[in-house]
Image (cartoon, rainbow, N blue to C red; front, side, top):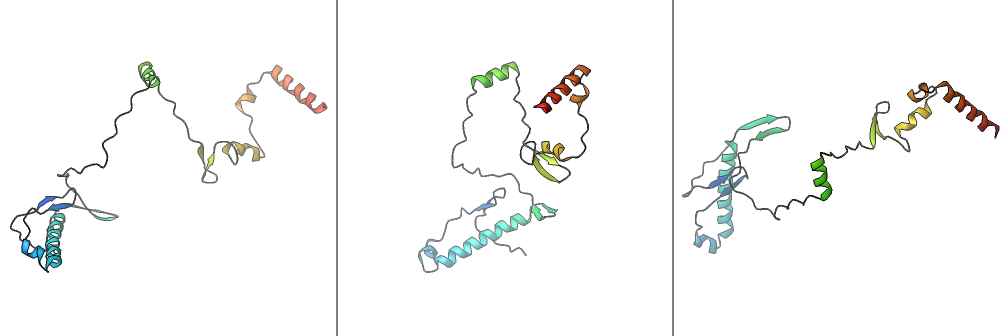
Length: 166
């Protein structure tokens, strides 16, 4: 499947970037003549064939996605379009928090997974997880209600009676 191609000067390969560099001089007569297109096409075809031959010789790995080649480290560094961003200076609060050992709060997300419906729903609000108790016909007594003293129970029952009178 691979074709052997001979060049007077061998190509420089950067397999990490999948690139080949041909430093051999071009034939000026072929470039200026009517064969310019065919000359450049054959030259680039030969160079690409050599690059493919080198790529095929790399170690391969079979995955569910197909056959993957393990590329070596790059030889030629590629330039960036823009310079690396400079780190932002630390604010007074960040410096104070670092010195005092204050860690930022970890905020929990607004959504929770509802196992009954199998969907992510809001914790509170419209169609929220907190509305779940309102739709149930039987709700267990919560911890707060269990801890009420008898005096608190009497006071709450009096409040309920008063509110019914009005």
